Image (cartoon, rainbow, N blue to C red; front, side, top):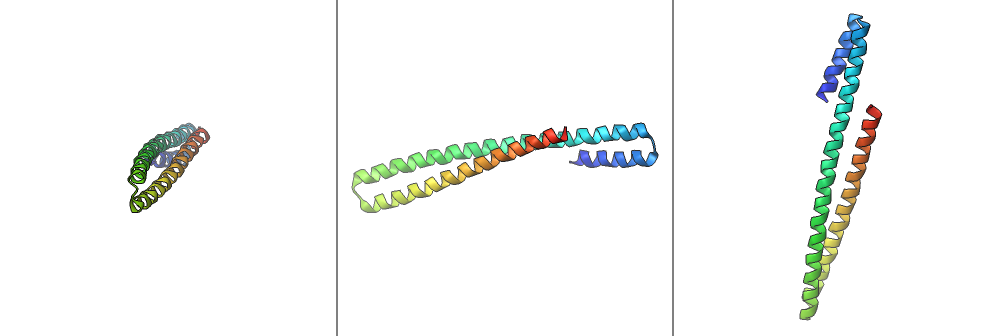
Length: 121
């Protein structure tokens, strides 16, 4: 984004100089800087989306572990352990749902960033 600010400054200087060729060149430089910033935001959004996907995988794995613990508790016949395991499963299911929402949000951010690139071009 600093490149955009520099390019904007160059455009102002070119306009003040009255040199039309310099103005046109500065406009191109500003447009290129805006595209570069938009493209960088896509890369960042895609990285965040990848992290969210990985965290979702962890949450799902934790859910499978918790479900296995529930089955063990059921087999043991210990009603207290079953109740605790049921609560743990419910909590982990909520964590998975929350992470699925985070993944959807991250993917939407990627789409927005890509749209901004298209607009900047």
